[in-house]
Amino acid sequence: MAGIDVGGGHGGRRSVNQELPLVPFIDFLLCLVMFLLVTAVWSQMARLNADAQVPGPPNEQPVEEQKKEKTLHVEMRGDRKFDLVWKEGTTVVNTIEVPKKQVPFGEGEYTYPDLAKKVEDEWKQNGSHRAATDKKFDQAVLHTDNTTPFADIVAVIDAIYTPKRDFKAGNQQEPVPAFNVTFSVN
Amino acid sequence: MSNKALSRFHQPISVPGRRLLHHVALEFVQKKVTGGGHRSVNQELPLVPFIDFLLCIVLFLLASFSATGELPVDKNVKLPSAQNVMDMVEAPMVAITGTQILVDGIPAGSTRAIEEANRLQRVDELFNVLKSKRELWKQINPGKPFAGVCVLQVDKRVTALVVKSVFQTAAFAGYPQVSFMTKRLGKPGGGAG
Image 1 (spheres, chains in turn purple, orange):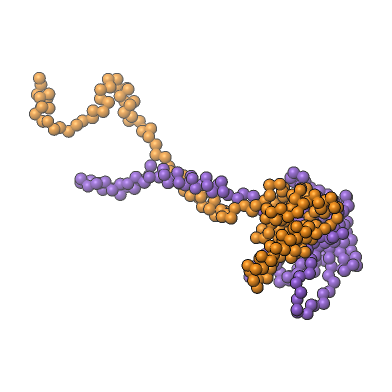
Image 2 (image 1 turned 45 degrees about the vertical axis):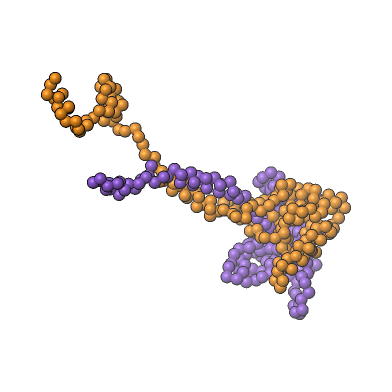
């Protein structure tokens, strides 16, 4: 095993060489490794944020007149295509069709890379809130029918969150999704 | 009796010579058992690199150790995966399975009832549980602004009608910032999102 040899031990003196008991130390380390492996968290959970866009509590400060902003409406009710509709209030500014092309990756799960790319291009052209100091985000409204499975909704929200912008909170600046998603009630 | 033999009796204390295995008559066997000038078969195990390796593993596992453990996910909920995700936050967990709605593990409504009604609706039981949670938080943290964040753990087979009903109910109960819990999916390029 391992020892410490400092020489000496001659002339009738007791030897000062020592054997370190390494085997219990290795046992201890192995136990520690086992415990940490058993308690380790391997799967990482995350979240997709959404905003219900409901009014907050009453505010005594005068409310600023809000100008109508462009909103991206994502219509996912069709079987073959998505409709991306830019609206200002109720006025339709532009409509784009994107084929509904699923790319499967797991058990009953898929992504929409074509939709993600188109949404990113659209935000680059029409997005209003780009500065890192801007606390507002561009709004996307998801239109879905009542029977759509949640996996499909997540795939579309994931595609809408593809375009990223910087966001400064305090001293930290980090890339965040450029859109804020909410649901259409009808 | 020779002089040499007698000298042993005259000197009771003598320096011992090699006696080990001396009685083995066959010379080649004697050589074999005594090592015979060959390399010793005893080996020192290199334990120090092994301990270094173990220490590295321990340090890595300690660095990635989570004292709070994994976030509790209902066993009946199969979460979907997504790439463009954010880190989890501490917030009330609303689990939506194929049959029921639970808030932090406590039943707070039925999924079936929403599907049978076939219309977007407020889930009263869920509304009351979330509202009482919000009021409790305000009592514990007086004067602090309420973030209004809740996390939905939704099974991937649950229909949009149920999701929208729960979403709307959470918003009415004072939780407009609703997050959907997902599994983190690696980017096609490599790193996790």
